Image 1 (cartoon, rainbow, N blue to C red):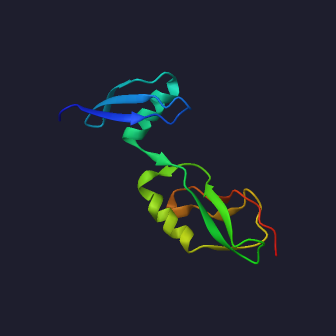
Image 2: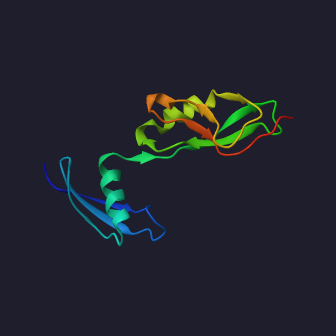
Length: 123
C-alpha cells in the first residue's frame, strides 16, 4: 500500500502544533511538526487508536436542578461516543449527587465509568 500523509492539529498542550503523520498500512513512519513529546504521542495514538473523553449530562430526580453534568472517567474509543451518549440519554439518578459519584458503571463494556462532575442537592 502507498504511503499516506495525515495532517492533524495537536491537542496535547496549548500550542496546537500542526502535525504531519506519515503512515504506511498500520505502521507510523514519522511524525513532524510537534514541538514537544506529547505531540508525537498524540499523533501516533490519534492515527492508530483515537479516543476521547465524553462529557454530557444525566437527568436528576428530586434534585434542586433537573440535570447533573458528567463525563467518562477516562478516554474511550472514538467510535463509541454516540453509543455512550445514547446510554446516557436513558439514565436517571436520584439526588443527592456528589462529584465523583459513579452514575453508570462500565459504559458500553469499555471498562470506563461515567462519573458526576457537579454536586446536586436534594430539593
